[in-house]
Amino acid sequence: MLFDILTIFPELFSSPLQEGILRRAIAAEKIAVNLHNIRDYTVDKHNMTDDRPFGGGEGMVMKPEPLTACLHDIQGREPGRVILLSPRGKKYNQQQAARLAGYRRLVLVCGRYEGVDERFAKQSVDEEISIGDYILTGGELAAMILIDSITRLLPGVLGCSGSAENDTFSHGLLKHPQYTRPRDFAGKTVPEELLSGNHADISGYRFVESVRVTLERRPELLNSVSFSREERRRLDQAGLLDQVNRLKKENGSDVKNTA
Ligand code: 9D3
Image 1 (cartoon, rainbow, N blue to C red):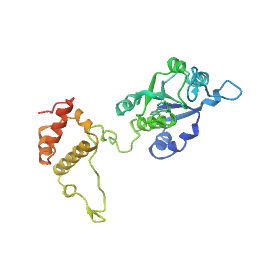
Image 2: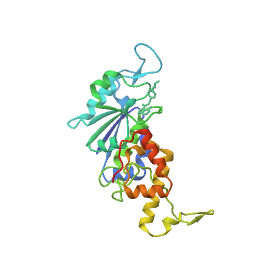
Image 3: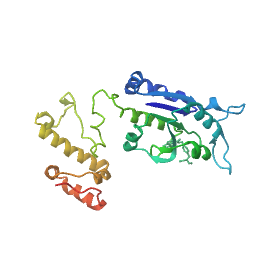
Image 4: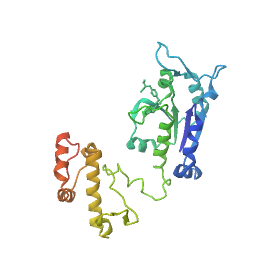
C-alpha cells in the first residue's frame, strides 16, 4: 500500500515511521510512505502556502494552487483515494480503517491554519476525515493515526497472525485486564481464576471482566452486543446481569440477546 502525504511539515513524520511495526512494514515493503512538501509547489516569490480569508475573520487559509499542483505532480496513472484530514470531516473509526485498508494508494492531505480553500476540497478531495472531537494544530498527527491504524490491518504486517482480529472492538466489548509475572507484585496478587489452568474458568472470568470494564467506561458499546444464555448466566453469577439489562432497556439496544 502506498501512502502519499501532502504537508508543510514533512519532518513531523520521520520518527513515527522509524520505529516498531511501521518501520518493519516499510522495510518489508508492505507499505511505502512518500512525503511531499506543499511549499515546493508554491507559485509566488515568497513561497506562500496560505493567505487571508475572503470575508475576513481569524487566521489563514491554505491556498488552492500549491495543493493542486502537488496532487497533479504525484498522481499519474494511479491517482489514489484523496483524503483531507479536517476537523469538519466524518469521524474516523475502526470500520473506516478496515475500509481504507482496501485501497492500493491513499493520498493524505494535511491542513494547517483554519483549513483549505473550499474549491480545492470540492475539486480534488474524495473524502474528509476527522479523528475525533478535539482540536489539533493541523492534520499531520491525524494522518499518522490513519497510517498506523491501516497498516496494522494489512496482510503480513502483524507478526502473530490474527492479533489484529483478537482486539477490542472486534467483539464489541473492551478487553479484560491482563497480568504477567510476578504472581505477587508489591503484595497484589494475580486473580486466582487465571492461575487455575481451567480454560472454561479463564474465559468465563475474562468475559465477566470485559463486561464489567465496558459497563464502567463505555456503557454505550453494550448496545451493539448480544449475549448467549451461558453468557447471561455468567453475568448473573457475577451480579452484573441486572445492570446490563437495565442499560439495554433504557437505550433501546440495537441488538437482541440470542437464545
Ligand atoms: C475555529 C474553528 N476551528 C475548527 C474546529 C478551526 C480549526 C482548528 C484546528 C481548523 C483546523 C484545525 C487543525 N486541525 C486539523 O487539521 C485536523 C483535526 C482536528 O483538529 N481534530 C480532529 N481531527 C482532525 S483531522 C485534521
